[in-house]
Length: 482
Ligand SMILES: *[C@@H]1O[C@H](CO)[C@@H](O)[C@H](O)[C@H]1NC(C)=O
Ligand SMILES: *[C@@H]1O[C@H](CO)[C@@H](O)[C@H](O)[C@H]1NC(C)=O
Ligand SMILES: *[C@@H]1O[C@H](CO)[C@@H](O)[C@H](O)[C@H]1NC(C)=O
Ligand SMILES: *[C@@H]1O[C@H](CO)[C@@H](O)[C@H](O)[C@H]1NC(C)=O
Ligand SMILES: *[C@@H]1O[C@H](CO)[C@@H](O)[C@H](O)[C@H]1NC(C)=O
Ligand SMILES: *[C@@H]1O[C@H](CO)[C@@H](O)[C@H](O)[C@H]1NC(C)=O
Ligand SMILES: *[C@@H]1O[C@H](CO)[C@@H](O)[C@H](O)[C@H]1NC(C)=O
Ligand SMILES: *[C@@H]1O[C@H](CO)[C@@H](O)[C@H](O)[C@H]1NC(C)=O
View 1: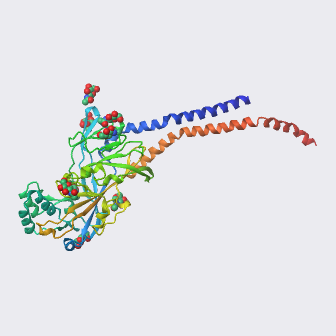
View 2: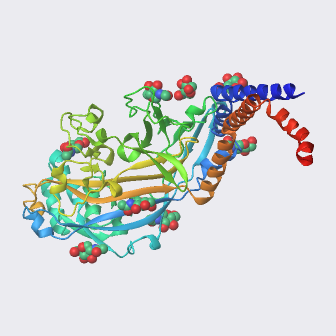
View 3: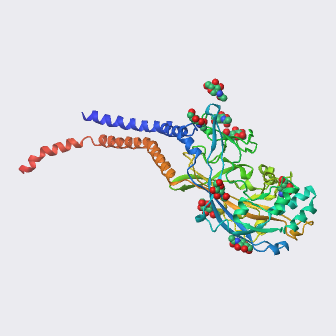
């Protein structure tokens, strides 16, 4: 009877240990969890995934910071500019996906993504309609640059003088961002109809979309979930310069590949940069109790095209490369002399920082990053930060430029951020807890196996004890009688 019991305990211990090792080795439960995640990564008509994708719940904020110029006369005399950062002016960005069409038996989805910007006074330093900012008069600079190819410097100079246009001008934050019309722009439009009558750095962007996207639904493979395959009818996305083949290709920035491998880069599509953006794994972070991988652009992202061949596309005309930290996006801004950089020239050539008084680059405030939960691929937090600069120089034919130094002049920078809302964070944490319970089952079984194993060993090693106790009982009467 005792032997049978002993044998059962032994067999049980071995069976439990083998079962737990088998479960761990075959990763059965992990695979079940992955399958469940993958099942969610398909855009199907009527599914929750599609609904969330159409109206993403986490609020996106766009913050603008301006550089207010305080010494315009001195700058025209060739002195170093002094600028003061003013901001944030915060807008909530609504970016639903509309005109959604399911194509090709559910394998592809086409849609538009119009963005609407709503001013949030509580999160801003002042009133965007009232606060005045002095910065480079971009329409005047564009008009002057235009004459280098058209040779119309006399009529342009006449109009600049007539409308008292100077190198620097003052407008409200709202006007600089969303557009204004004035007599000079109107007159320029008459001379050259390609010049817009309205100017603003983000003019006509409120409520408009940036063209039709076609993405894969994930039906064929969850790996292709929301992967962009077409933008504005361009099928072959030639901005996907791929240095590695095991990369995760561009998605539309709202969702990512599950089960991320920190060794692999991720690629997101960024129309501001006129190309896709490579991000590499930097550290591990925790956001609202959710573990995440932090991805940042590699140091080489802004490296001069003269050194980094991937940036050679920003050297226009060929061979004319801006220094490290700057991307010449002139061609995708209707020829305006605009260069993009990190805010305060973070990670740029020291030269650009020294050329302007008031630049204080810092990693914490000026870095672009994405925090992604590796298990689900859900984006938990992201900040995209970039600065708009104007290339200014002195023109002999125009008195407006005086003897200004050739400068990359910072105008404004933006901080576009998203943070997972509390509701979604709670849901994600609950799901992660459930799956961690599920995946810990093999370990529980293993612990049970070990416990039975110990019981077995203990029982085997002290087989005679019960008999000794028995003889003690027999001796008891003797003791009593003595
Ligand atoms: C989803 O199906 C319904 C009913 O069949 C249809 O009316 C709707 O247009 C479909 N939605 C999409 C995005 O195709
Ligand atoms: C859609 O599915 C049907 C039936 O399965 C098939 O005949 C057709 O070729 C498919 N169309 C596309 C575009 O894949
Ligand atoms: C953008 O458009 C919406 C609706 O048309 C409007 O409510 C909002 O104030 C506009 N935002 C800006 C910055 O003009
Ligand atoms: C920006 O500078 C101008 C000129 O010095 C000044 O009038 C204006 O008040 C400044 N703007 C803000 C928001 O401080
Ligand atoms: C979709 O994913 C599969 C499997 O990963 C891959 O072979 C295929 O090329 C992908 N399709 C496209 C259009 O990227
Ligand atoms: C990503 O795209 C590039 C270029 O389009 C392609 O060569 C590569 O195979 C793709 N990688 C994956 C993992 O789909
Ligand atoms: C930027 O590119 C344009 C052509 O698109 C070129 O004319 C201009 O010189 C470039 N600017 C700089 C600062 O390299
Ligand atoms: C950018 O936005 C994030 C999230 O709203 C905020 O934490 C951060 O301080 C902002 N950065 C700057 C430079 O204001």
